[in-house]
Length: 296
Ligand code: HBI
Ligand code: FE
Image 1 (cartoon, rainbow, N blue to C red):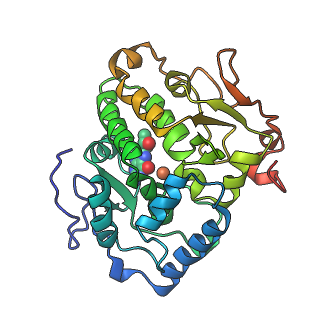
Image 2: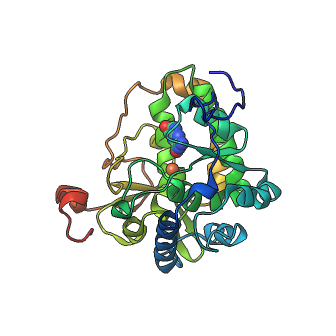
C-alpha cells in the first residue's frame, strides 16, 4: 500500500491507498443529524460522574454538542491547535497497517457514516458517533494524544512480527474499554464504553466483571470480547502510566516472547494481578447481551 494522499475518485469510487475519503458533510440528511442528537443527548444524560474529566473537557473544547453530526473541518481547526491531531474520514474499518500509520502521524480515522435508528443501542462497525464522540475528545489531552501516537508507532513495528492480536488487545483494553483511577473514584476513558449508554454504568458499578490494574504485557496476552460487555476492565492510575508503559517498552523482544495466541481468557484472574474487584461473571453466565434482562 502506498501512502499517496489521493482521495476516493467519485467517478470510479475507488478507495485511496490511505482509505481517506471526503466526509461529505453536506450529504447528511436531517434524519442522520437527528440520530447524532439522540445519541449525544443520551450520553450527556448518563456520563457526568462516570466519564473522566479529560473526556468531558474535550467534549466541551471541540463543541460536539452544537447540534447534528459535527463537521470534521470545524473539529480539526480546534483539535490541531490543541494537540496537532486531525480527524480524517474513512468509509469502513481500514487495514491494520493503514490504521497504525494514521495514528503514528496524528491522524485519527473516523467513520463518515452514522448508524440506522434501529441500531441506536449497539453497532459492530465504528460509525461517526463511536469514533468522533467516543474517541476524539480524549485526543485533546496532550498525554493521551502522545500515547495514541506511540501506540501507532508500536503497531507499525508489530507488522513484522505477526503479533497483531496482542496489539489489538492493548488497544481494546485501553483506548476502547479502559478505566482510570482518579481522586474522585474510578472513571471511564475508553471510547467503546463512552459511546455506549448501557456499558457506561456497567463498567464502573456492576458486580459481574473483574477490575484489574493495568499491566501492559498481561493485558496483551489476554483475549477479549468484541460483541458484548467486557468480562474484565483494566485500570490505569494516570495517562502518563499508559504513555510511559508504551514508550518504555521495546516491542521487538516483547513480540518475540509473546505466543501466537492469547494465554488468558477474558474472565481470567491471575495470582500476579493487582485486583480491585474480582467479578462474579454472572452476566456472561446468564448469556450476556442476548439474555440479560438487566446487566448485573
Ligand atoms: N479502522 N476505521 C478503523 N477504526 C478502527 O478503530 C480500527 C480500524 N482498523 C484496525 C483497528 N481498528 C484495530 O484492528 C486496531 O485496533 C488494532
Ligand atoms: Fe473505536
